[in-house]
Image (cartoon, rainbow, N blue to C red; front, side):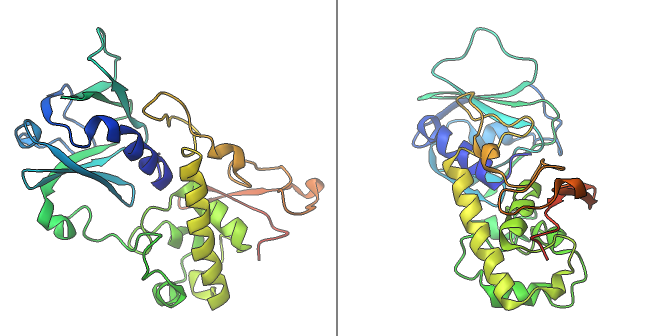
Length: 278
């Protein structure tokens, strides 16, 4: 699933076709995604000028000059492809075609777990999808006091708490494992056990790791591809995610004891080093 760095990468790479362009046409070949695309989606978007692209959590937002904002979530396998002109043939899962006066964007989504909707731009904070999201990782309000306040009395494992989008929005499964590894915190510790200095580390490494991944074009573990068709490269810098049984890069953990451990938390794979993470 595209996480925050991947969504940021997609947003940055399609700016050339979308920003300041006029949407001349939209063809929706499949409306059934996580939710059915609203019937008036085409009417809202067609003829409008794109005045801004931004990201909130794992959502890409496209601001139009008619007072509406398009909301895009990529689900498990959604991706955009960029063309100068409409290609002669389409792929099987090319579900949405956006033609602008600067080029063509095609949204492809094999599993159709994405979400495509819209709302009035002035009501973004009230939107049922976006209104309950927590702080962005780079928000000035994200500090140890905030995090410890959210973790107070919370017996949920800290790994799952980092995935709670109502606390910090945008952290996904891959990056939660990497953040806790860098912070030297076991993922199965209760969130309420986190101390002030550990909260500082969580915040610091959240920002550092996400920034590094954005610079690397995101992580390609399964399906993710950038709009130019290339893959991300941050997976080459992962320390623990997907590396069960290997030695972690920062210690001399004994491979006879299994090296990096893999456990299942909240139906998701979690990776950590028993030697370093306490």
